[in-house]
Length: 573
Image 1 (cartoon, helix red, strand yellow):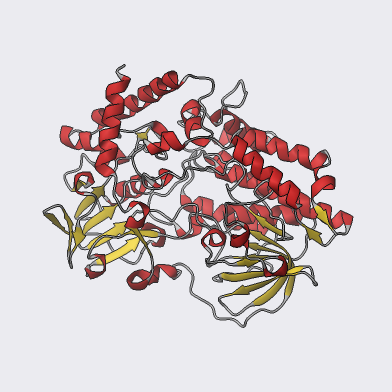
Image 2: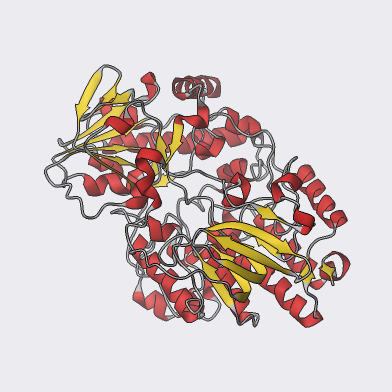
């Protein structure tokens, strides 16, 4: 295997796609496209502002918020308010309802609390509506609709030290109070659009996949889809055959492996023993992160490539040397490229669909339908790499280089602003003791204990990947986080304390731990083709992740809870 030649090929393909504007090539859905801020699924209901008090307020109705609400309920917290900008529970599964949407992690390990709710998914990789309905079922099972407030955005959190509680202001004029506030507003919620010159002049129909316009009939229309990532490879096969002609505008091809989706065997489901889901989740996490295990219970595309994933997640390759890891990576990518050549009939189209980069430079894709779509005569692949993306849009055309493509509708499968929650972006300002702004406290980088809470900001918890450990199955990580937060809140109740926050010393110790253990993925990502994983070719030089990975991190939290961690650092009466 000529690794040097492959490196040169990867670099050349990367350089074709690097843009000087980096992540600023995208624009927010404001101004001309401000309608993306509206909810197309649930009519807005006007109400009077709330001025009441709850024990716990959870910001976010996706799986992170639902898991936290469920665990708080199990911990004995009676008064829980769930709050979300959407019209119902579900988070990303509420907003994303495009045709063909499925999870890409096996549903038995992705959909949480299956045993508690009494449900077994129907498909190995569940469709979006089944997942959304499961989110609703969790909320109903744990009574989370009781005080829920939807289509409401929090605009400020301010700590009242005398009352030992938070004042929560919203865009509905609410001034609510809560003893505990948990922020799980997600980092895949704000749609982004490409900053194409002339995009606002297009007079046809447009929408983002996360605001699917089911009232618009694609039949007989010339349709353009912009984006070929995880969303694009699911929705494009569904549009083909309905539209008169489909143009797929591609900057970078996704690596598309076999999905092999199929119904879950009812006989297998009927013989599951109590505790089956937790065992399956733990096994999947152990396999994909390279932890010690002698069994692969899932056996899919994720569990077959753990060494390659560790390069991205924790910066190591499960004991392989750099060259051995690079060779294994090349073998896998050659396999994926060979599949393209086998499935796609036209050799020129097949070449454009071959991914030339390392395996985890982009989130791997899986589909049994996507590549086959390009064998249809009514589907045209338009590669935009050599001209830096779509050149411009006119009133009725998408222009790439000097070639114009007349279209009636453009669908943007261009994803979301990644890793930017309202707290981090400043759109949700937080003020702690003595009015200290949280972003001022974090001016030199995040400062937390275990990623959950910060000194000077009592009774405030954050869910997410910041200063803890991540996994490709992030719902499992969120479940562990929710359980930890609920355990801390329950312990506070037992001890009769009003304020919980880490000491400055505990916070500094954890910041140092992150600094010492954070994976060094900068070099790997810097050589990758641009995408959201590497900030469009400009990877951030500092990681805020716990390097040993989620299995070790979750065990660390369990030991901390049971071996005196709460006694030593947490409680401020």
